[in-house]
Length: 439
Image (cartoon, rainbow, N blue to C red):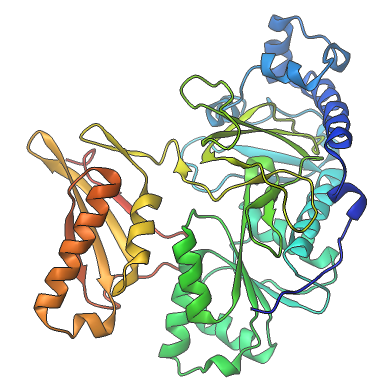
């Protein structure tokens, strides 16, 4: 692919020295402590620690003495226990997707939304998006921040935005063709579905001007990225965010795509051992814990994301100094424990997509077989493989079982499916069916 050289959107902050970034973070942390003391939730926690004002924070090391915040804390604080501003200053409320029962809500003032859009614009520009682009935003609009959060950031750098939201693939394709969309924002699974529908409805790749996609909302492997790039002939960029932290602009890949820059003037990131909650060694995998510095309505101190990643210590060729985080291994709460062995869905996806003849759609099924757990991997195979000699399929099955067993130390059952027989998702893909609790 031809390398695109782009200017910095805000060079003075994106290339700031580590010392300058540390000063910005310390000032931001002091402000957020003052903010947090205005909330019923944090005021009680901090009072028990003897923390009375932001001035009690003397260095960034003091952050480690502060308590963690978890998703359950947000539910317990519902509806206004984490509100740090007067009600009349609120202009929008969002909620985390996928929540059942009591939702986890996020409050925003006008300034908060402007800052979130600014952060998102910085992210999109770092990946190569410009005012010459037409963006089709295929993420759900509404309480989920991936729709509106990305939308306002794209508008801020002058992109033409088409807010098609999720679903209605026939209309998505028509708009992509008629308006010559150059950038799309969608889940990885929907991009694969989109490619399949292009073929089903008789479109040719030359009908579209598409050059890049930004993916988010569901974890995916580097192998899946490569598969999407090959099938759609585009560049695919990874981003990270969650509603609790203002949405999809927390961390973003630049044009070099060697990890995601986490914007350290607006977030403090820690990577901790999820068992001991102590810092891991530089470059080791642990749980990402984030303190937000850029929101007035709702502070979050040391928020446990449950996402597993690592810092990338080497400098990025783009010149940005904000630390990068690696593609996520998974989530601590997505981890499957099968006969005492820890297994992440992403590990299985990585093996599947490396093997020639295996399709991109799969389902991991876990169920009880007597007293033991049984792991079955259901996956489509490619059309040429499905039509081939059964001995070839059996050999592929043996190779796949051996590769998975070597990686996860469990010998899984393998079920091959006919191409197109497993439904591709228009939203977040369901990759795991744990039937043990249902039995």
